[in-house]
Length: 89
Image 1 (spheres, helix red, strand yellow):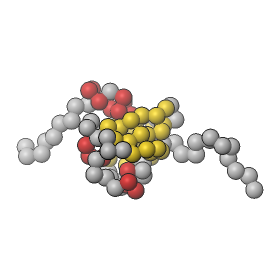
Image 2 (cartoon, rainbow, N blue to C red; image 1 turned 180 degrees about the vertical axis):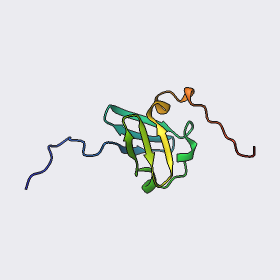
Image 3 (cartoon, rainbow, N blue to C red; image 1 turned 90 degrees about the vertical axis):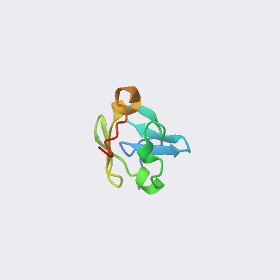
């Protein structure tokens, strides 16, 4: 029986750590921190749903259990993607 070499990433994207402040995503080009202050819809998500994330393309993440799509650029530059709510309009 043969196993992968130690240290080989077997998934394209992985949640590596979760804290009260946010969570870390490991992507092919590096690790990103996703703060709950900037991405509040993840704050109350159950861990099982939070870690079920796919890399739909090189710059697009999708959480099917939460029905959340997110551009990687929005994590890198949240100021370019202000949160705007249309609730109540």
